Image (tube, rainbow, N blue to C red; front, side, top):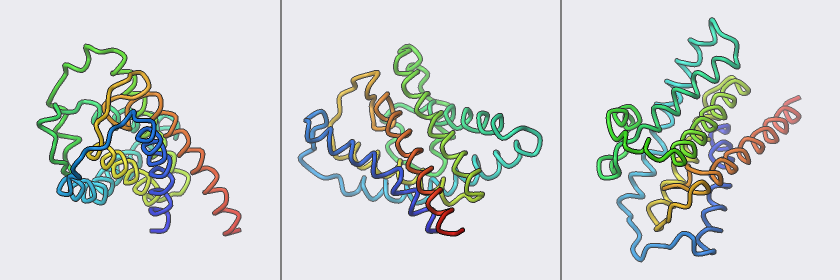
Length: 207
């Protein structure tokens, strides 16, 4: 459980700092009213969605693939499927309510985004990297708690910033939220680096 809290901070803090910088720079504009109901939904999603998705992707699927494939291949396939499932999202008006099966049901909606190659590359690259980081966390810790925490931090902070601000799309730097674009890609790499440092520190402490 401590690993989950560590993961939440490792993914959430870089994203929150970037959000604050973008707000102070007036790239993101704060809304006049705080959508408390939406914040409650996001908090619930950040608690439930990672449990479900990490159990499936990094628990069941990655575990099955590791029986017959090398770790690198299994990690890539798991991350690729994770990115595909989350990339094929429904239009905004149909995905306002986030549930544990949102990633799966969204596959059936909205292929219009493929007309914009820059958005496709920005979104898919970030999702693929996030999936890879989550799989790497699972392999390094031999537990689902670290990926659950990382996943939760990304959902919570990006969701809160998304609901509290008005944001322009400035691709390839930023897409419709804090998980699309080169800046989010860099932030994910920062979280990955912080995870390396944290796990190395933990290993020294437990030695």
